[in-house]
Length: 232
Image (cartoon, rainbow, N blue to C red; front, side, top):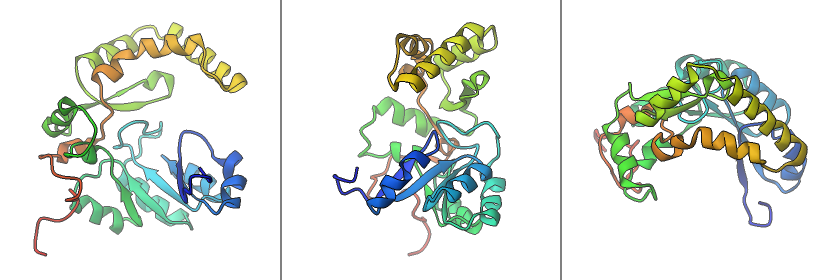
């Protein structure tokens, strides 16, 4: 990262504390992605320059607290001394303004940019995002406490049905895979088994945020979809 001249790094998934000294030594700013105020405060304590506060609306992993941005963002503003950006469920100018009003310095916007002309994503995925409403995402992997919000389809419904039954075997595999990764830093054959158990996610359950409900067209990314349509 340092050799490539990167000056800003976003971290997510686990604490970046082990890497902070090296990143700071190379004058690299660190933004850590958090789904709760307590994790945001920990990021502040270990020296992160900013945080990305992800509400329950976000695509991918929204955490396990289920706190939406209308509550999470003002709470972050009350507690944090470092700046933060809002993430999750943001797809237009009105939501940008709302995030700023709730205390954020800016926004992260992902799913909405997938549905642009330049995005290197299959057209079927873009069409699905544009066609989706606010009711068209599902939460999967919740029984494993690794919740992920994805765009709903037949494959995702099958996963939800499996999760409603006995997950003990799958949970055991996940525990083994996690332990192997911690001990060796390498994926294992068990990891492959867990991946196969959720293989349809990649085939048919694209990660999507609830802002997919706000995507009504497929503009050029150079014409930012968050720009207001009124006035000049």
